[in-house]
Length: 128
Image (cartoon, rainbow, N blue to C red; front, side, top):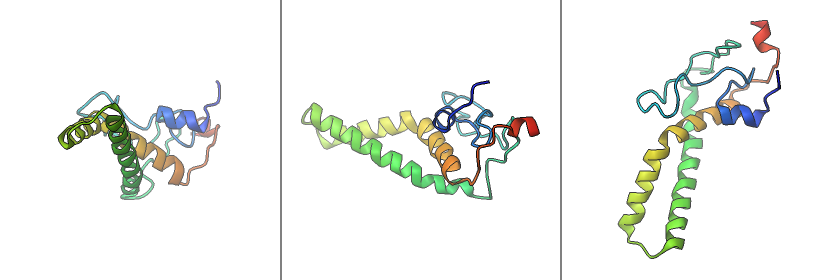
């Protein structure tokens, strides 16, 4: 089997240890269950929540994503024309609502990969 790179594992929402198991149970398009994470990796049994409240730190990444989104939408609207402030506010709110599942997931995925203290082990699934 072809080895998955760290960037591919992040992009696909895979476990940081084995890069094979999925972090989330359901699709991001499942509006009611997009937040539901697997407790452990289905392949190597890594516990995703490293300690109680671990993913509270992912809020900082989510905040950075939100600032980038606000800035991007604001600059795009200002380039496209002269709009009222209400247009900016409504457009930003719509963008945040539409991208919420993706922002939520990737803030957790990136946080676990960057700050989870987990090292990649290609044999992790075979050892379990």
